[in-house]
Image (cartoon, rainbow, N blue to C red):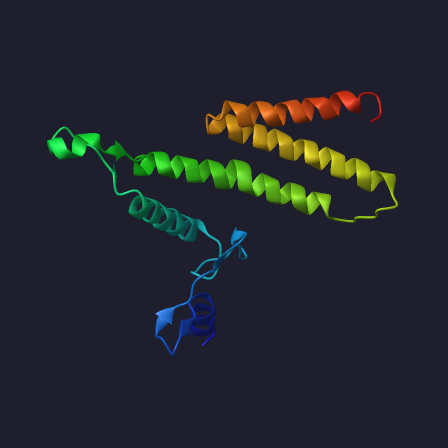
Length: 167
């Protein structure tokens, strides 16, 4: 009975529609506790979301094919190709592991034990903002967006220059 209750909590079913419930995709993306099942954040949910996003993007771009081969018809030569599943997986992996999770950790650090009348809170906010800029700088480099990378680098370096010797 315990195992059945545990499984039912991990895989809830809506009896009215007889469809599996899933995490909702809102303005902040997917948010849920790390746990197994379709209502938790886990590798399978991230992979399925990435695949769904890829299919959706492909439906918006009818002149883009998911793969290209030498056997494609002449009519397909004008079509651009989407990244391979492996390349798309690398982007999702980078985004989640090296971008999203570090930003969440920084936000948790920034907003923990906040006292607006305490100098340490201001210093902590500054340091966390600098960490965010460094992550965004790396994201610009990863996405081959030199203007973005340079913008975050300049912002971070300008703040470091302004606060030199203060901390």
